[in-house]
Image (cartoon, rainbow, N blue to C red):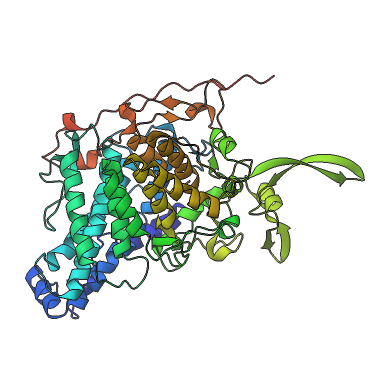
Length: 556
């Protein structure tokens, strides 16, 4: 395995810079200077397309760390790191769980691989955006360059929005706290003299980038959903406005973002999915092909760690599951309860004797079969015997091409779905004072697409916000939003429901964390602090303290 992964580390060396070889060299192999590159782009703007392509592909790079951890597969891994920090998604604390560190919060050190990975993932991507912006200046009149500039600005805003939420608490009440370095010039060396900008300064830059991107993308026609469209730019700004509590603006942007998209139907979410950018509810996504390095590695990709229906990955032995208190709160009439397996007692006959056995059930997979070596098996039986399926294991995400047991882990990753924008609109309307409007948006969505029996009981903005938060926890489960929501809403991490003492988490990570505990912040990696004169070691985030685990109930 080590030799196999090392091979891909060598292959990855040529792609981790995120810049295009087409623009960096003459056909004869001589290196372009910056001025020559600018002249070329000026004469032929479409030659910058390769650099712009790097914005789309740059979120799915494998092995950017020398240590080669198996969570090193790009932005989808960042999402699973953050989900593992929260209270709704858990997995066994074993060697096969490459996200056990975030789940245990023992990655809150300057030397942790996780913080270095997060930092490099986003700042490498920012470098790509800055390279494009250098060659598509603010005063350009070329329509192609305008589109490229809009792409770069939106992607850079996306990166900084993630960084500021990971390395500091939420915007409101923390505006003057230290955020992350703002690197806006393509040649500014990361790790030279880049002090931490304040939270407010970072958010101002994010909004500045998005405001300009929305103007530039007004007439832009994208080639595929891996690119940012005008609607996606509105969606990104809606997210930021939601965090900043600009409620009316968030509602307006979220509504504009929905143009041209419809939620996945009740029928569509009654089978595993969430694996193709071609879905009509996907607004933006990472397109991942069998030729991509994250797929060629075999197991360094998101299906390997999150999809319970692949036969090639860690999820076969360490599936990701929902926490029982949340699952218990999902109404029986809500299809999303069946995104997770339940255990049922079934009468059967074994050796001519009536026997009651436990069977894992879900409407999503009850009639599904897997073709294994020419033989058909029920998937619940097969994955229980071959893998480690158990009660509450997720079956939300299907394998590549919707083939149970597909060993090619080339599924796309959702970056923005229209369902999220509907929930943003509902919350923002309510919090801006229009509770009735927010309730209508929420009820129309949930009743039509997820739970026909749903009815909002909210009578105040805060009550509707709570209802939307619950819907976000269900709808966006596993997609990287839950930890951000806890911080945005200033809620504690509650893995153990008290006083019932109910939790699915392994005993070592069975703890609750107060909303203001510094352990919720990642520390800036030492690889950055050691070379950045603008960040003193004393200015790093404090380590925080992980609470003691809450002992599970004693079984009789």
